Length: 170
Image (cartoon, rainbow, N blue to C red; front, side, top):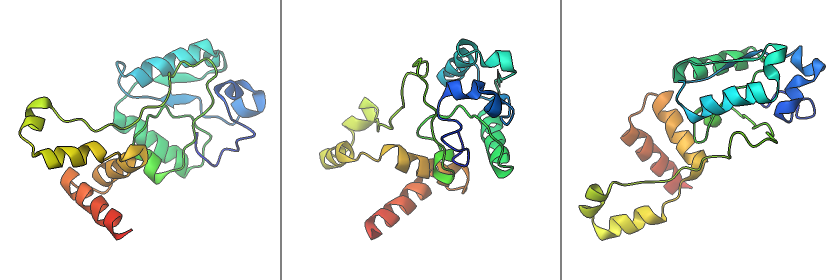
């Protein structure tokens, strides 16, 4: 939920059913591909909370469809629900708050984790592997890097170098 929607008006998924909220909400919930977990969970939420009875509907699309729809709705200050995950670049450029979801259909929040393939790790110097094991950037940093790549047009290496330069300066 965009941060400009008051928490006292919409704090949980169930609040979307309240008449004074439903009249303000955009009913389209734009998702991504049908096989994504967030898409499956979102469809279940629409049905199990009875949101479909008020005209809310989840539509699959590309990631670009989802992101552009959010950015357009945000620019118009619409009351809008977006099924997002962490880490993700929109969290870097917008303040988006999660809705309480008492049924637990979303399963929880993801956390960014660094992984290295075993064959690649075998060829890395031990000191570098130790340094990578200590590195724990978290969702906020990965969202920032994702924004640098997806919206600022940087390569992954450019984004990492820029982030490292800012981090060292702090």
